Image 1: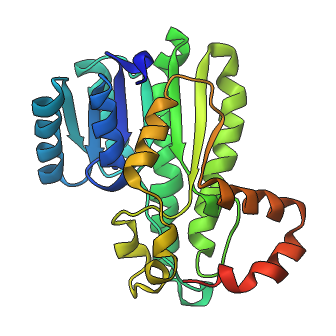
Image 2: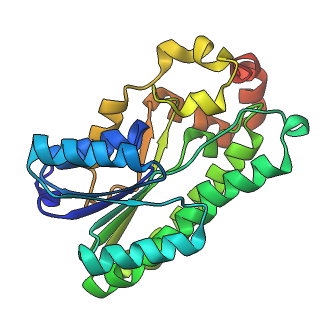
Length: 264
């Protein structure tokens, strides 16, 4: 149980389903007040009602498409006015599409960068001023092991997650003097609906299904790290070892694991 977040305001983007929903439920279970952001209002309403009923904490929701930068500004302004200071921001909204570069459209590229990168940065900028003033806060960016080790058919998605990791690592230096924490979460594949978009033919899920992470356990790990100085959360451990080896000896890893990388 993370007693540090009891009574704190935790904002979660992409909260209506998948890992975002799991994080919201775990935060509520541990006594935090959750602010849910996503595009689907019907799902937000159900989740907010469930949280208030089952855990007895307040739960606000706001409809937000993080691809719309003006909406990010207006929604976060409303949260700060109506709910109060934000203690933790979980930048979870994002999506991927598995495609060879030659088959990927420029619209796919544009949409992925707008959601996975620009929306994340814009949301972060909206919470930073009050966090810095209060000398309290935590920004948690959901990146990916794909941001450390790119594989075939994930070039655009990996590029967005590389960008998220670069932004996260730089931001951590910038805000450290103000006692604001910044954490990158780098999971491997998780059993969520992420793959209904990313893996339309089901090949990847079929090949790696037995290795997929339990979303409840991932959410619990993330929530337990809130308001701590945890630099990174890397799941699963064995996959992160592979990512580190790739950074040290990429040619050897590509030769030995080339077939394993082509599972999509």
